[in-house]
Every structure is written in structure tokens, then in C-alpha cells.
Length: 323
Ligand SMILES: [Zn+2]
Image (cartoon, rainbow, N blue to C red; front, top):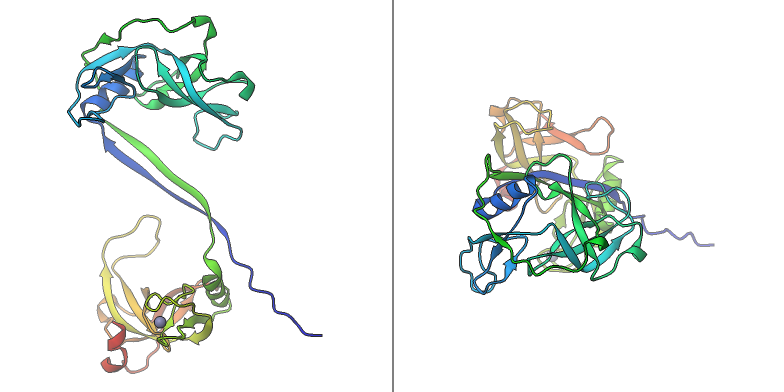
């Protein structure tokens, strides 16, 4: 019987990237969001006479600057919709709801928001809806908590939108929009092999069959030749500092005292340098050619930093091609 080695199971892990995005609003968006705080929905009249809600600062057709604000009604008509059966954190409602485009009475374009409805059977294109205002309003799109059915409101009237100065006390001039990407990351087969070997304190590169260069960490293909790199080669663990910088700015969420040295390190046998922190030596004594070895993290799964081995410095000619 022949033993068959299964392909290594590819690693997967949840990954969240999140940061606050701060932006200034300008005159039109400032009036729109401040208006929401005051339960007033403002649109802007385009050059051709159409009323755009939400408003924009420049005409989408002629690119002319738009400043003629008008007030539209808090009631409107659903122009299209999609049912959201499983709301995610941060979405307008916790229970299943419909994403709707609503053309507010007096507007010519539609606004995207949520509709609170018991189920998809209760939603249809053409249905009448109205704004449900948030109890606490701050000058944000979330001041509209959601839309709710308003069949009692009857057909849209022909009321012309009313001119509005856009002037309010204490206008909102900027917002912070939290950006968040929440996904499952898979590093692929080559990096899975690399990460599994690291957890055994071995550093695995992959050799390009065409140019013979050994890539660490491997990406599965040679970026120069474009061919697959399947030949695994153990490199290091010792290496040579090829170049470095001294970091003087402390990073948030990183418990490392400044100044410290971040270096490019060519592991013995590797065809290019990877980067890592240098420790165990005063920052002003780190130099090109310094010989280093990894100091493993507490859980032993990756090199936390590199420290001097005590060997004589490497000759420049041995690493000049790796700078
Ligand atoms: Zn190659």
C-alpha cells in the first residue's frame, strides 16, 4: 500500500480592517445633514430643473456648481428594493428589513435607505413610505432611522419643493465615517506551507525553476519570471542586515519602546531580504552586514525580532545583490 500525502490544508483566519474616516462636508452636504438633524430634507436643483436628493455639489450632467437648495417632503415612493434577511452589525435595523430606493415627494432622484417591514411580501415597488426620524439626531444620514410604510398617505401630491436657504444654527461641518472590512483571509498554499513551517521554527522559501532565486516568504510564483515555485528550500535561520532604519515614532497598539531598528534581513540561502525588528543591541550600533538570528515569539510561531549572533560582520560583496 502506498502512502498518499494529502495537500496541506490551506490556512484561513478572520481579518478585520477598521479605521475612522474623517471628512469635511462643504456647503451642500453640510446643509443636507444639518437639515436632517432639524427634520428637514433638502435637495438641490440641477441646471435642467431636476431636484436631486441626496443633493450633490456639481451637476452630474454639466458639472456646473449647484447651490439652489430646496426642501422636499418626508414622504415618498419606493422605486426599487431588495430584502436583507440577515442584517450585519452597523446596519440601520437589527431585524430583517428591505433596502429601498425612495423618491421623496418633490424629488426627481431616489435616496438609499432601510425600510422597516415585516417581510418581503409587505414590500413592493410603488409603495408609499415616510421617514421615521431617529429620537436623537446629530446631523448624519442615521438621523433617518429608517422608512416605514405609509399607505394612508395616498398618492404623491404635485407640491413643488420649497426654496430653502440651507442656513441653520450650529451647522454640521464634518463627519467621521467608520470604515470597516470584515472578511476571511486565506494566505494560499505557498504561504500556508511557510506559516506551518514557521510554527516548527523553520523558514521555508521556494525556488524559482527558471531564475533559481529563492523567495521568502514565498508567494507561489516568481514575480520576475511568472512561473510557479513549488520547490521548497529551508533558509536561515541566521541572516545578514542589508539595510535598516531607526524608528522614532511609537505606533498605536504596538508595545515597543522607541527608538528601535527595523531592518531588511537576507536570511542565509534566500534570494531577497525580508524585514524584521532588531533587538538585543543598542539602536545606534546596528549596521549593514550585522549577522543576526531570530528570537521566536512567546508562542513560538514566528520570529518576534532578530538579535546579533556575535559572528563577524558579513562582507559587503556577499549581500550587495540583495539590497
Ligand atoms: Zn524566476
